[in-house]
Length: 208
Ligand SMILES: Cc1cc2nc3c(=O)[nH]c(=O)nc-3n(C[C@H](O)[C@H](O)[C@H](O)COP(=O)(O)OP(=O)(O)OC[C@H]3O[C@@H](n4cnc5c(N)ncnc54)[C@H](O)[C@@H]3O)c2cc1C
Image (cartoon, rainbow, N blue to C red; front, side, top):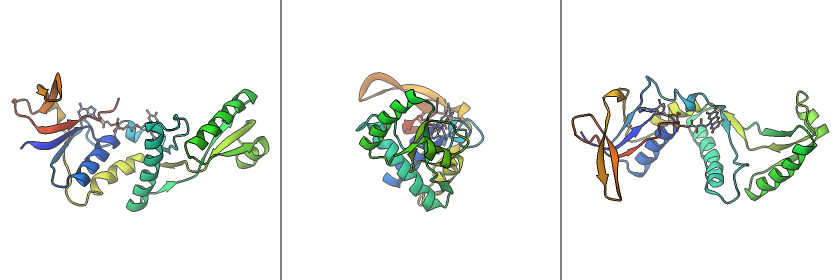
């Protein structure tokens, strides 16, 4: 069988990509290859579990927009799937007067990015978190924590119509070079090794 899409890597990016493809094209066939015996074994399953707000990104940039939209989408997905998450907020602490100047710049950046930020003085910081020593902080109420492994596990089941097929035998996969119409450079297409193309299109969110 030649699949419409082959996805190499069952981390959160590969699984979310499969979900979005099936939402956009419910009839398409997808195969996901994963070299481990389970999904989310690498970065997805070992990250800090923070729902970032995107405060550091340049205002108006694609990264700032995607981070803002992604945080909202992650919370909506967790709510829909009954996955626990906590919007506990985050404190960005200035340890000394020099860092307080950076706080002012970050406050302005948050405003430009449309992210709520609260200025907190030394006394306020002590009240909120007595175990932190600092001259002040920025509070970002929208930031939170969740378990991305749980999100990854829920992604395949969240597809209402058709689930992608999984394979955990990627060693049988070869990358055969084929020319693509849009580029003169040869492109490697996944193939089972007998010259047959496995999929018409492929995505490779294999992590770093
Ligand atoms: C220390 C750390 C902390 C982080 N903290 C946060 C955080 O708090 N919040 C946040 O939003 N983000 C955080 N991130 C970033 C986030 O974890 C990653 O952006 C995200 O998990 C990347 O997902 P992925 O699917 O691209 O990669 P991965 O989760 O690494 O998935 C890639 C998958 O591809 C598979 N693979 C690779 N090569 C092949 C192959 N040839 N054949 C088959 N399978 C293959 C791997 O086995 C793996 O399962 C953190 C990252 C790090 C490193």
